[in-house]
Image (cartoon, rainbow, N blue to C red):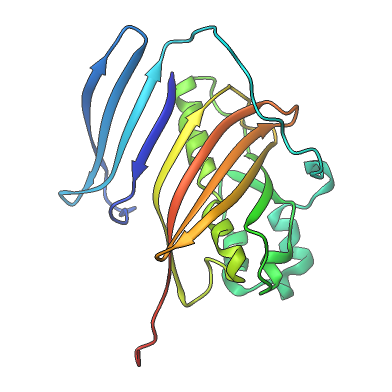
Length: 236
């Protein structure tokens, strides 16, 4: 099964055009296997991926504990429920994001960054899960978990600046994504996504994330750098 991956995003994708995946068989080893994948549209690479796979092994094991002071998902409102309760106080960009249909359900623990321009600590906790069961195939599980792990990560890097990726004067996009898969977990059960952003510099925000099961099991670790560029006015 895949145990780690890294991929830079090079160009925006086109949802109306098929993606051609070019796969290079980099290495086939006894325990580890490596593949390189390039996603191509309109004759140009839009994304590349380096993925490492490992046969299951038994060995030393430890993990960091899950934060203990976080309210459980059953006590929190989903984004759609928050929209109904606080819709008038939420900026239009965030409102449109909450209204989108998606196969992922999220319950943010902190709400202040949605309604305030206060400069906050660049950290957040979010409960997240799929809206339905995911097939038991480990490749599909890993793909869905990777998709899910991109949600909200870039937002965290803007908190220290009192900004949001939905601001009209901010150009935001994921630049790359790295992920390490530690343990399996049912993706339609709530997971705690803890995030922190150690640095923002050069119009790039860097954020780390950890995904925990409700019982505290560490499922995966994530790192991402994203573009958070302030747009210049025509007069500048």
